[in-house]
Length: 64
Image 1 (cartoon, rainbow, N blue to C red):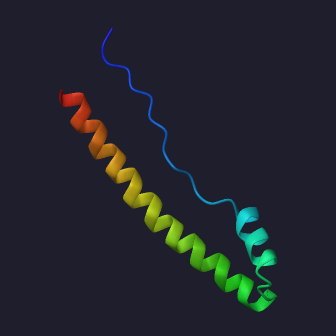
Image 2 (image 1 turned 180 degrees about the vertical axis):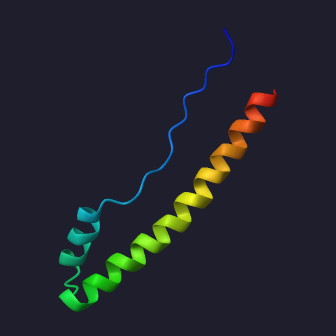
Image 3 (image 1 turned 90 degrees about the vertical axis):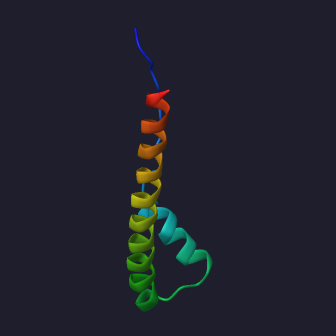
């Protein structure tokens, strides 16, 4: 059978979580659009970075 590895990867932040954070912190409707765009952009960078790191770790594990 070979090596079987189950790896979880992070997913994007849910828009509802961002919306609730905006509500809790009294972010205005005008600012909310900016906050959503900013969080989405930062989240995309993080996901790309983290998933690349996980892929490299998996390649290292498979060589052993």
